[in-house]
Image (cartoon, rainbow, N blue to C red; front, side):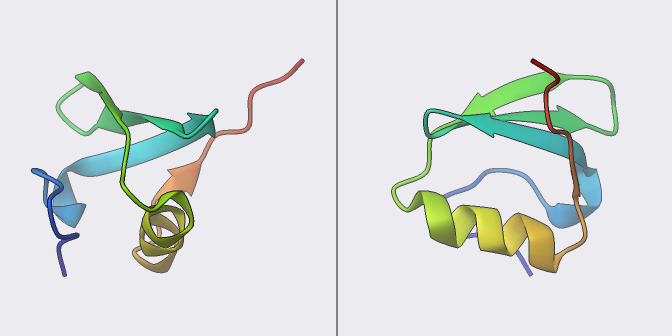
Length: 59
């Protein structure tokens, strides 16, 4: 199940972090991408629903 407008498939995603509406996503191929969705809550919920690991930065 892909996310409309997001150019990667769930099987390509490894982990993510989010700050100020910008998602930093680690792909399984080692590449790091940045993505700003139209709807932050919806995109976040989608990532969680497909079991992508969230990385919470330490302060």
